Length: 194
Image (cartoon, rainbow, N blue to C red; front, side, top):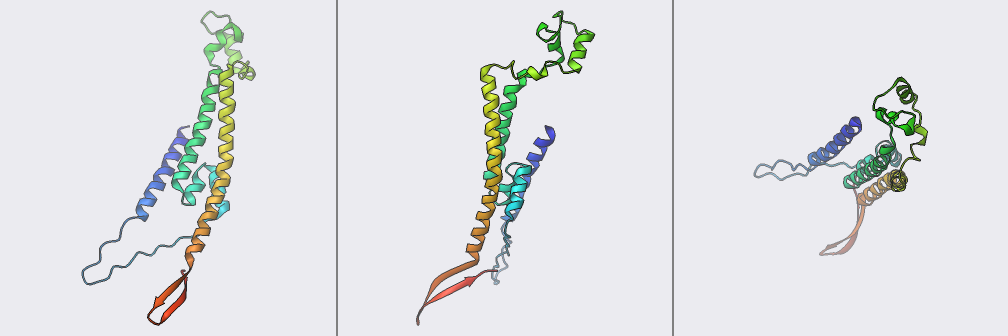
């Protein structure tokens, strides 16, 4: 769990610092010289890479396609949904002290006997964990897991759509058609950016 949280924090820090570096203004030009704009190159995004990244870590494909806020929202939503499902299931997880109870083959004396410890090692009664949950917890577990799975699948296909949108916007900015007015008349101008 610590590894996942560390990875998420590193990804968010990387996304935040990369946008800060990209937006750093150029140094002012010395007097008498014209200021030149820094060269920016935007590359098309591969939709399959975006899908793979989102399948690996939810939200990463959206961040790759340039939609950082959307990626963070997907990441937080999916983690929250699966976290809620686990929180609903967690009371059904048996601990060593539970095997001393008479419901789980123990004698209820407050001491763990060799037989009770063997039941815990063999993980007896683990298969009935879902049945022991209350109706509200069962509903929370099923709802959280279903929402998390739905968001996860949506996240993958949304990353593909964001990559396609990025490529479409990039193509539209490369070619521009406009009217130019001059003293002699008007003309149509075609601009192609490389």
